[in-house]
Amino acid sequence: MRATHLLYLHGFRSSPASAKARRMAQWVAKQRPDLQFACPQLPPSPREAMALVQQLTGDWPAESMAVMGSSLGGFYATHVAQQRGCRAVLLNPAVDPARDLAAYIGEQSCWQNPDEHFFFRAEFVDELRQLAVGELAHPERLLAVIAKGDEVLDWREMHARYAPCRIKLLEGSDHGLADFDDYLQELTDFLLL
Image 1: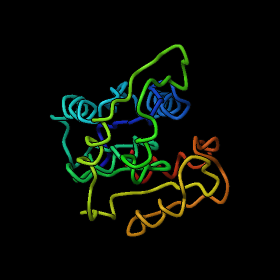
Image 2 (image 1 turned 180 degrees about the vertical axis):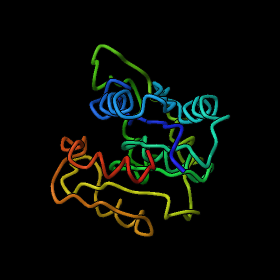
Image 3 (image 1 turned 90 degrees about the vertical axis):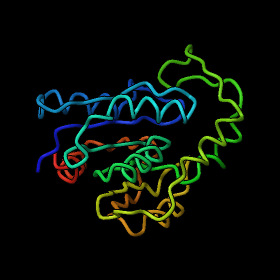
């Protein structure tokens, strides 16, 4: 069954204006204009971010929806896929964002628009802990793209976390996956787009 709905989740300090989010929007417009596509600006609160995702996708059919997430968005996408049983592509997914983002409590700016600020609160770390997924219920429905050249997250930790899943291990690349277009077809095929 072909996917009918696609959700894209951006990472920490990112937005729907990120290169990958814009690329996916372009791909959908050109290749699958019939696809219902959502790429929301996620609030800094993980609890509020997941409430927004639920609001946007609550009536989407689990059997024909797909999710793609980058970095913190990959952590969120893992949570969504676990809850809904849908297919997911995880792009350099954060494995333990509660641990990693504890160092970022305070005012932050958006990568794509440094004039845009938000406050990352201490309680958001606990909200991240509450969203952590244990053993993956359907590892065959997950594809993790992991770059050994990721300068932000440890590729070995990602590889260990998603070992039961299909993994596309990139020898170089970077956290933002500057070479995203090179394997976009493989990712969209996996998501049945």
